[in-house]
Length: 281
Image (cartoon, rainbow, N blue to C red; front, side, top):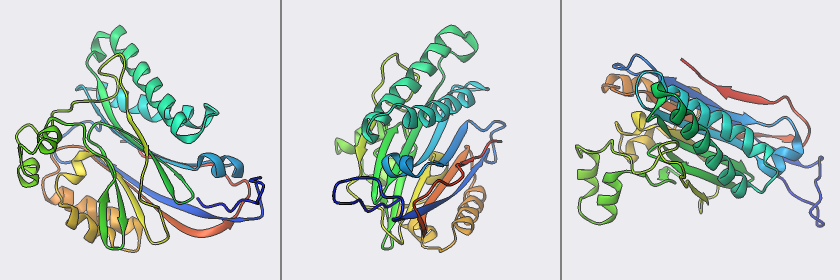
């Protein structure tokens, strides 16, 4: 969303804003019986809220087996969505508070229910305010920005393989095919205290760009260059359909989730119906 402010910084409801549109897809894949991924995109109804807190996109990939992964990812989505908009803090602080509370909620529930013990979830959330992308990230779900023909990875995985890569012990090619590729070093709910990465991307979200949030069940099948070729398409629905079909053709041994966002036509700053895209299987 984009707002121009008066010189005194006051809210101006007559100024046009970018209307961000989104498409969300989530699938069990070819091998799993349950979908432990969760996804949501929120456009607040109130124009002032959109100006100050923006639009919110979230993807979470739960783990723990049976139904517990679904529980963890659902808690992350619900808690972060609620607290981000209701903490009455600035965006980065609001994301930090929301992430800490989501971790606490998952940890406490798992600690008191033997069936849920050991559950956790990755989470990548992006608050879009003007041309800025405020990010919360933990685990190995990812955020990419498609800009001028390139897919730029905005987040860094919290995995054992990423640590090896950062230390120069393996090459990027070896990282893609490493046998320990699914070992996480951080996730929500697996420790009493857990800090997410909270930051503002140094990449601006401009007209013609697309934001992709996804779980590892999607990106593990594509190189960055391949992702860029898909994201070059003009229609978000068609892009998501083609990505989904390609993942399924290549094996889809895990759940996968796609959340695509782009800026569309400008609208006058006014209160609009709240829109929340959420997909569940």
